[in-house]
Image (cartoon, rainbow, N blue to C red; front, side, top):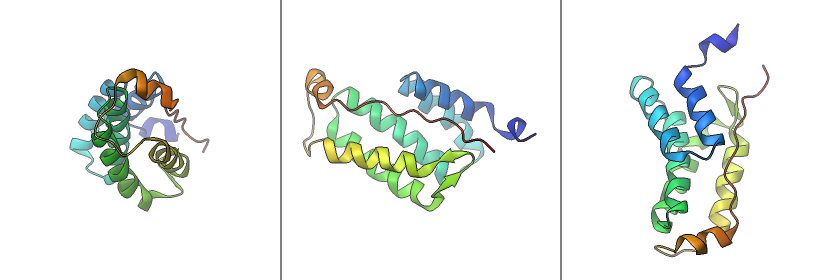
Length: 125
């Protein structure tokens, strides 16, 4: 069965990401990335860190990480390891279209942008 081959750290990343706990999401996936150094994981780590920075008002850092994540994830289109990579890149592009090109913002200003968190569910086999 395929499920057993999905690393626990990856499942934990998805759970934390979907709970909007972006710091923990990036931490658990970083552990996996240290053993399986593929750009797919690095890109997903950067998505979590980009949202973390966004929520904390570090707009310049957030935009940079979203751009890097898009670059790293693009070769894995349309699907990779049961993830709809197209959906992730669409989310990144939507965020980049909304986030102003400034260095930082107050948290309440960020909230007013209305950018939702991303939800990633594994695709059915």
